Length: 126
Image (cartoon, rainbow, N blue to C red; front, side, top):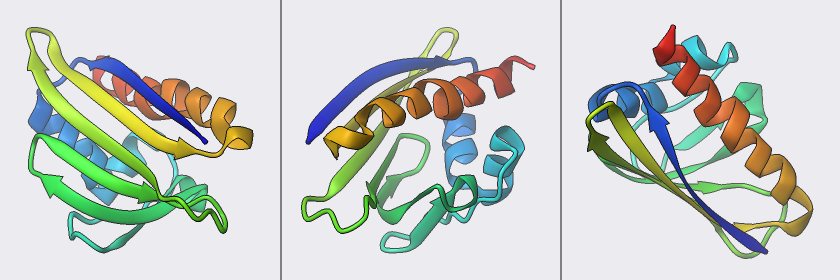
């Protein structure tokens, strides 16, 4: 199991970034894929037409999202914590993803960098 931590810069205010990460309709706009998401703790979510799924743990509106991501029959929980920090040019996103299976690590990191936060940054630049 591996952990990953990285900061991303998104050219939008934290409230807009939070909304883009927690609203199914907005997620579909920047991903181009179906998404199921609510801000109800304990609810299930699905992104990229089911490629990513898990359970929402907690939310702090405009500031923080904590989720469990599912990886098959994995015993240890894989936890994603996204914390939004305001900065002059928009938002600094702090990502911490724990307990990523070794065999999925490279693909998950590529996904975070390109498909997830790369796509979200491009969405706000357009």
